[in-house]
Amino acid sequence: MSAAEKQPVFRFAPSPNGRLHLGHAYSALFTAAEAKKADGRFLLRIEDIDLVRCRSEFVDGILEDLAWLGLCWDVPVRRQSEHFETYFKALDTLEELGALYPCYATRSEIRAAVESKADHPRDPNGAPVYPGLYRNASARAEPERPYALRLNHALALKLVREKLGHRPSFQELGCGPSGESGSLPVTPEIWGDVVLARKDIRTSYHIAVVVDDALQGVTHVTRGQDLFAATHIHRVLQVLLDLPEPIYCHHPLISDDTGRKLAKSANDQSLASLRESGVSADEIKQELGFAGL
Ligand code: GLU
Picture 1: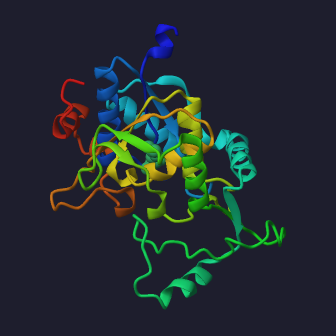
Picture 2: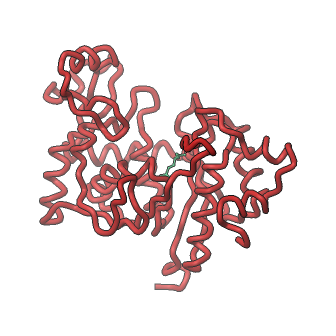
């Protein structure tokens, strides 16, 4: 193995659906700092499969904001919207394994199926676990009607256990929201049958992220704790698709003065607006604990 192949690979993978804010800056700086400590490579990946919400002006904004923070990344930058075919192939493989099923359910059908059950389980994002409608319907019974593809999580876990001879685990070097760390058992059942191909874009975050991390040789996945629980799905997909296992390092989400977690959707102050108001990149790095990076 050459020195370049042995070098650890880290990535920052924002979605260009708004301007970057302090939470993104923390994640990017955290990833760059970890890459530096490990003498590794730092990649930037643009996760823009959602063609409605993602805009190229926000891609320009990401490049501008990260450069302003003084970060350098390897080029070319991978843009997921240029690789849909690659994600479709991974979905084909999962379909051939029998791990997916077409799901015609609408939001209102799902709501109706769960609303009468007060104790219906919720997934880590707080949404009701999919109640299994269409799980046993014959494949593509109505090809003209839009459908999503869902992971049959029980069957997928069975296939994974058969392949490995045991329940899979993942290595967490950081920690989950409840302090989870070390070698952790993979429990896709907390999510139920997640959507892996959305009705609109025919793929999903889960598929694109595991395929790209593997294709880009990412050895260390550093990201916010809001994505910790998604790792349970990602490890199942990695085993089913014969992809290498990265190490995970989830970091706490930074909060504003009131303790509220920062998110784009909450209109948090963008890096661009901080910059315009005269705040320097050094001040931001200092504030976030990365002075000197
Ligand atoms: N694109 C995701 C986001 O902006 C991050 C994906 C990841 O790091 O796995 O939240």
